[in-house]
Length: 165
Image 1 (cartoon, rainbow, N blue to C red):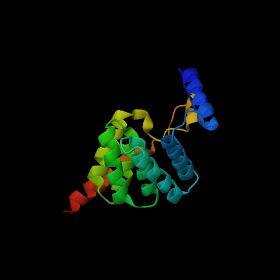
Image 2 (image 1 turned 180 degrees about the vertical axis):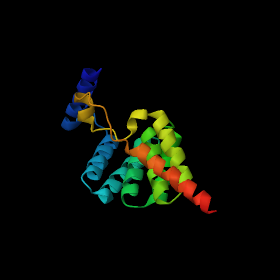
Image 3 (image 1 turned 60 degrees about the vertical axis):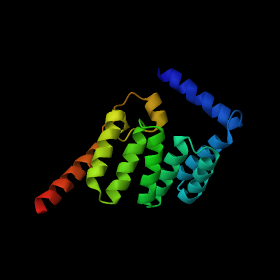
Image 4 (image 1 turned 120 degrees about the horizontal axis):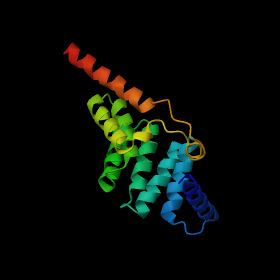
């Protein structure tokens, strides 16, 4: 199974790296992801806006733009785009988890808790998963459970707030 995943990724990288078979939409998504990963969220935002203009029916543009907005601290706007991505693809665990981060920053803890739980239910391995190549080439279990730790912290915050009321 891992070998199949490696082959699929290498083929995708080879095709996209050569520019063959890559649509303008995918170029915009890849550019946005690259800019976001290199700490350039403003440029990523432009790329994801371009992707949405090209194909407003695909979830990747909205999820990418939401990630860029989240990085920029524009949480309410990010939530709107995560909502749109989830309208298009309701089983998108990363959108739930990242929307939970935005809700957490806005101190909307109950919504953050619900989103973390939904994301973990959809993909239990999403919790601080190692990088893609480490996942492919390693059988080392992931022991740092960041999402679950933050989820417990949020639940404690809600309990404290309720106790103070």
